[in-house]
Length: 259
Image 1 (cartoon, one colour):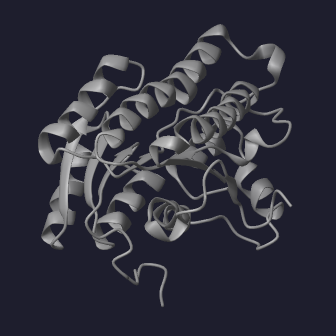
Image 2 (cartoon, rainbow, N blue to C red; image 1 turned 120 degrees about the horizontal axis):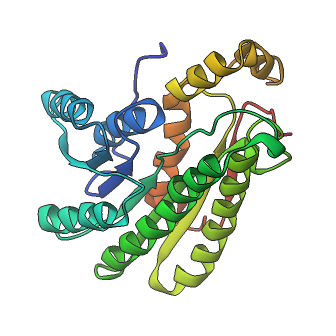
């Protein structure tokens, strides 16, 4: 199997799945994978043009996809996106809350108030808003599954990205609390903590801190960064019925870097 091949098994057949940050990177890989696995996908991001291209590609392959524009800094657009899912399908079975913003890399005492505010708004509050709206829709049809994208930087000290790491650690706590709170509603909630992954976000970090990609790669026991699809794969499994007893888990997808 090559890195571009996808083996499908109908893992998500019959499910409606909402994906944030779907225009690129892990989110775009998840959109294609989930559709290949049989899900109807509703893709959310700020980049409308990129979303529409992705929807066109998925439909050309026989998939079911729609796009909705979302600004994670605007809670009303998040709620409106879930209203659109309701209009389109009348249900929601899965959600992959993947969108994130990177902070300007630098030590804690030089991190700006603007960076802290953005990290709180996009990397924490937006997830809270999305999760509560997702759960409300899932609850109407007997439950569902939510997967949040956290970060390896949430599991330990994060001197280069202190605000980012802090908000991702808060997201881990929110994930665990939601899992316990919504278990009676048959809503499972888990998170992934990816390590170095070959996305545009890592390229942005490399531009600000030349050499960071090489540094990250040397810290990964498997000797390379993950592809976006390699992070999307465990998300698909967690959203599927095969993970029916998994909830409240914070699962590393980091090639052993956090071991």
